Figure 1 (tube, rainbow, N blue to C red):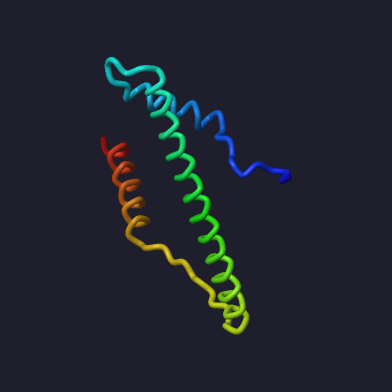
Figure 2: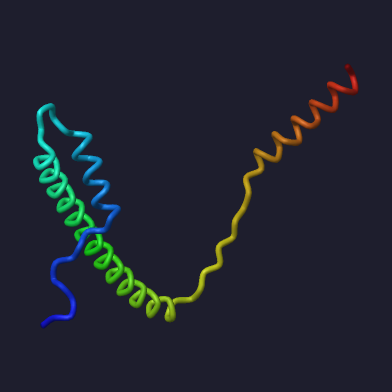
Length: 109
């Protein structure tokens, strides 16, 4: 006998989200049983989406790890390049010009 059941129970959060969605889309004259069945279908859809999303994340992590391993081995052979950041002179010139204009305005006015 297996220790873990193969059928996973959905989280209470997923169940409540599915029920909210089913009740939000409920048609007039729809029975509680029909709403419950619709909620189960929505819940299965949410669970399937989560499984696919987790699988995509695992695959992306695997790709990222392999690219990092390749790039780290390539980086060891390359020489480190130093990045020098230079600021443009225009913002500083405009700042000085505005302060000069404000000083002249208060001095002459």
